[in-house]
Length: 223
Image 1 (spheres, one colour):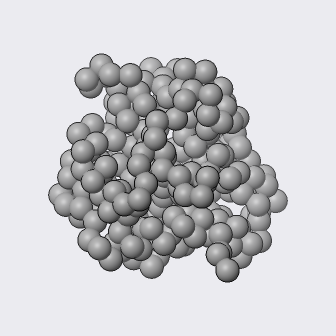
Image 2: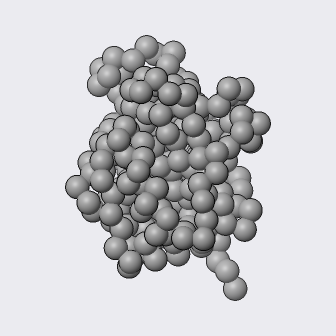
């Protein structure tokens, strides 16, 4: 029988992801930063996930630990995380065992958000094709519910940094009609989650980035 990872984690923790933190004192979920091989800087944006976790706790009533965990793609520890985030600027390489481990995590109910920090796109597509050779990334229309959770984004993803001046795009991988991976491209969403002094982005833009991040988290838990 297929076990849904997120439901299992919540059951073991004795909480609902969207029960106010005060009611879940001492039982916290943790976001995970995915560490991969190939030379890409998987460690980019070190202040992103703490800020996103805090924002979700304040606005969604989640109970995330604001200290994220770093987890390797091939590690069994991957199953201890309810939400995985992956970012970087360069090369990404998954071994066969790592690809199988990530696939098992996602099929069991896990969720992966990939954010291209600029220059990651060709490598991450190749790596994820190894995880799901039978699936293709599909671009989500602006009407998709991930853009219409707690916060409304009528025109899709916010554009945090310009880079190639392309429109931001949101792509997804689905398995049995469930989104297992959401990929934000030409957006730099994670940069917008960082502490203000890191990139000196306007506060309004940072708020939009955090709001979209919260939408991703909320959608991942509601599936």
